[in-house]
Image (cartoon, rainbow, N blue to C red; front, side):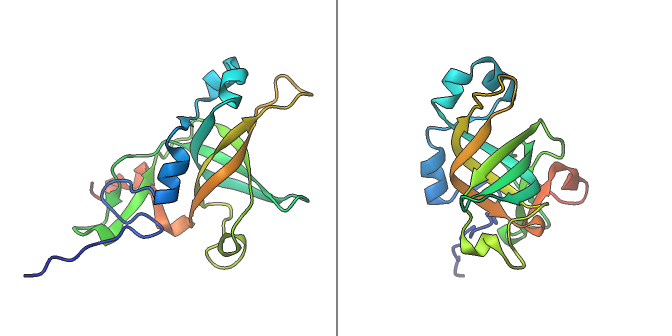
Length: 168
């Protein structure tokens, strides 16, 4: 009997969440975004790298070649939901409920910019970067300026609502 290796691939087909090597490096010193703490202490939060997972609600092309994403923030499940035995059926899993909203700006790759699997409303992203606070409005929420992002098209991830018909 020969045992084969399985790579989780770009969409993380694995029982447990599997960051890409460049993702692990980008997120190694990042704080998980906490909207309450970021509002209370903007100086500390803007000085550190921050990581978020979010479902894209809106995508707007900016004039500087970047894209602004409005994210419905979600919590990552460390263990993914799977359709059956075998990691190929596992999908990255995030909470069904949102814990807030955040805007992020990123320079999209060509593959994510257009086409069937492009980054659009309904996609999941992980964004790592720095929070930028507006000088004009003290109460305005910050924007996350991405130094790294990872994208899952809408059919390549699930929410915890799928646990009724998928297994862990």
